[in-house]
Length: 178
Image 1 (cartoon, one colour):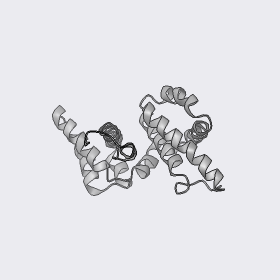
Image 2 (cartoon, rainbow, N blue to C red):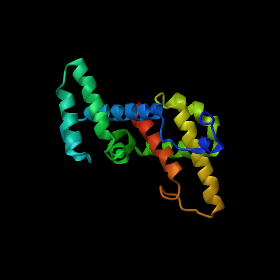
Image 3 (cartoon, rainbow, N blue to C red):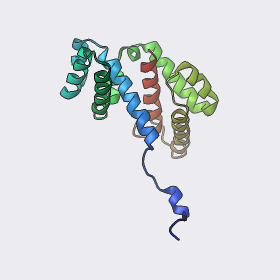
Image 4 (cartoon, helix red, strand yellow):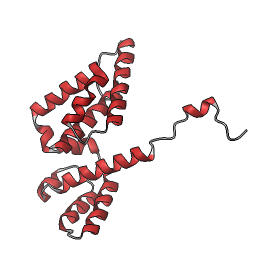
């Protein structure tokens, strides 16, 4: 019977959904717009590929509405290959040590308290997606339990990748909120 699901169908991973892909694309476009607001000298200091740098500089010169929309999409496409973590680290708001410490504390509180703090994060960062945030927090919490059970005390992106993804997401939200 070809129309029925088998129990193993529920466990297949089909990759990110179209909605997740769209949200990721929109997020990269917003990050690209933030980069386009920077001066040419600042952009040249960033770890950007030549095509992305040229697209960002062209974005500043474009005046027509439809051309701006197309250029945003093109920048978003180029941003997929860029080192997003390096670009986020280079943005000014995150160089603020006080903000960095606040994000560290927020990350620790999210991992400790979980879903209880989602409302606070959603209020502080309106660009946050509740579903993405909840998923990242739950994965990070499971990861903490499993690494503690295995006796791993070192915390880095290889021993706790879900925690690292949550950290990057919080940094993105902070950068977009500024």
